[in-house]
View (tube, rainbow, N blue to C red):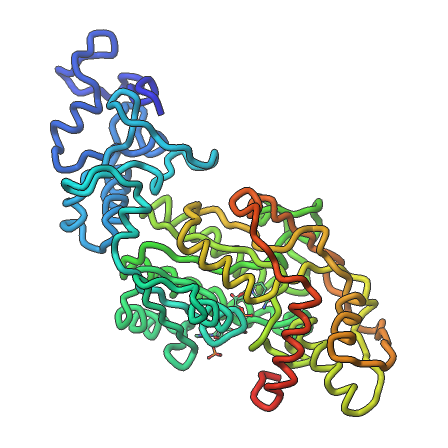
Length: 441
Ligand SMILES: NC(=O)c1ccc[n+]([C@@H]2O[C@H](COP(=O)([O-])OP(=O)(O)OC[C@H]3O[C@@H](n4cnc5c(N)ncnc54)[C@H](OP(=O)(O)O)[C@@H]3O)[C@@H](O)[C@H]2O)c1
């Protein structure tokens, strides 16, 4: 963002102001003189062609100062002096991902008398209160474990909530929950979730419940001034007809698979809302896109659960009765599975470090994709099941594959180590066998 870009075309100049050729003061200087307490300039795409911001631009400036101060009060935010860095002012805009013209957290800012820090550091000076919706589910429990096992930080307070704390399909209950806890950060996991066969039966319910939950959570987070929300999409919401591997730019490129269109469109709308909250209010709401998740505390229900926990439960029962293991479908579809504890560690990184609004795929590599048959064989081995595997071809296979690229994740975290599939399956089977009576099934 150089001085030339800032200068504008001269159109819309007020009477008495010098034109481009005879300019004695820049729009930036005139800005600062008129509004000495507000020394942040809006990014180029918020400006009118005149070079001055419109009303919407000013609103965003105010929102951004609010965000930078990490508080919900505009008055408190005024303590913070923020400058968009330009060569003209002797500052430099730090590198930002190409799709963000103005990547706010990377701007330098100055807390009164404390020298320059990045926005992220400025916000990080305040204690965080992190609300996790869906905190009793597969992913929520994994985050709770990782935090309890040393992943949490002293300046973080973690609050895990479930439907017992509030029914998030209700706007009133959601608002009350947020007013009670006043989170500075939100990990939004709560959703109506299910496997292929539950999705086929209840597309309408998946759409309605998830749309209500997501809208209530995002808007309550906005209203209570939360600095950041990380929501959860899924690779199964991508277009059915697509090229592989899929990446983060392809979410909206075509209709999802017909089996789960209700869930898929509801999840896609989170991405739309995140972009809109950023455009209109400067909110840092983002989303992650995991592949199939599995681990302790999963839903092991055979009819309604996902494929891997369903197979674990079937193997458990087959061992009890000495019968064959029946796998639904041909066993040929391919999937990338991510262990819930790996996903939880990545969630913590996203919450603390990932500053884009655009979502990020959290997945093992393409080379780690396995067929349903291979997954069933791995479970059989982990549970020491010696019986026969039978494939019930009358059941649907669902989408044949959804191979996702984790290259964006790898650019950020090249050294992240995923738990080997075999080990993660073994740990999950052991957890299920040990907790059989209390497990969801
Ligand atoms: N599992 C996967 O393979 C997978 C893959 C990709 C993405 N995801 C996404 O990851 C997130 C977490 O999934 P998960 O597998 O952990 O789900 P899960 O085990 O089924 O847990 C769902 C959580 O959401 C809560 N919840 C559901 N409806 C609610 C409502 N109306 N009000 C308040 N809370 C409600 C549940 O609370 P209760 O315990 O009180 O019912 C539970 O804590 C979801 O957004 C899901 O779409 C999952």
